[in-house]
Amino acid sequence: SAMAVDIKTGLDNDEFSLYLQPQVLKNGSLCGAEALLRWLPSNRTPVSPGTFIPVAESTGLILPLGAWVLKQACTIVTDLEKYQLPENFALAVNISALQFAEENFIETVKQVFDDTGASPSRLKFELTETCLVQDINRARNIMKALRNMGLQVELDDFGTGYSSLNSIKNLPLTALKIDASLIRDIEKDEPSRAIVRAALAMARAMSLKTIAEGVETGSQMAYLNTEGCDMIQGYLFAKPMPYEDFLSYLGRKL
Ligand code: G
Ligand code: G
Ligand code: MN
Ligand code: NA
Image 1 (cartoon, rainbow, N blue to C red):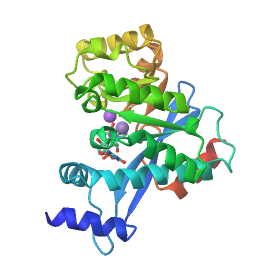
Image 2: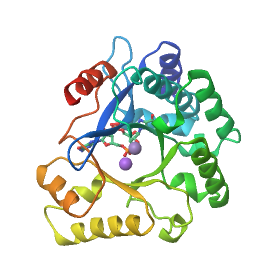
Image 3: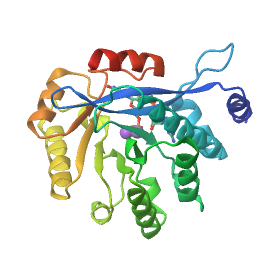
């Protein structure tokens, strides 16, 4: 497609960038950020990730894009070490199912850490259920290898998938990321609150950390705090922002 050609050209021409969205603890202190890919084609309006990520997925271009994202994320965490980071700070990177399925996925990841000198403990990989459905045993082994390297592994978009809850229990995950669609209605109705409570209880029973995304209001935050959610990400605190802005944000936070 025309867009696929543009994505390729865009990669060559440095048109992509990573925006960072802060993640905070109950008390509002910074504990991490999610790296979110942005495309600003030269001389044109930005293309939203909701538009170009699906094209990149269906054309396989998510592989070179994902490789660029990982390298960039590692470069960012290496640079961030110059600042006074919270001890537990980690940057979350979205990993596409296609990347995850690559035969040499682990070797590629190791190579990027070797090349950039980034500390694996500063990265958390966000996997979706689509990474798990094809071959759960392979998925478990890959996740173990990532954990052994020191990376954190989170299940993204939790609550929107359809794979069995039972398959999650034997995975070496560090956290469940509760999807924005589950957070949206917790102020409005009891069933939505019940679902969030159940997700938090399940995570607790499996000794997993929890992070809620798409938190936009103080009352959503208050509810999540009351129910023991560990981390919060959403417009209530900050929108995804360019790296330079994130550095100013860090400065204000410290
Ligand atoms: O960034 P939001 O701001 O609009 O992102 C839209 C979608 O694109 C989300 O589902 C998000 O997970 C996905 N996305 C954003 N950045 C990346 C990335 O670097 N890699 C992959 N695979 N998906 C991403
Ligand atoms: O699929 P994934 O969870 O990786 O994507 C995260 C998406 O959520 C990104 O598109 C990001 O821009 C978006 N996002 C982050 N915070 C909020 C929020 O508070 N409200 C809404 N509506 N979207 C958000
Ligand atoms: Mn994500
Ligand atoms: Na999500």
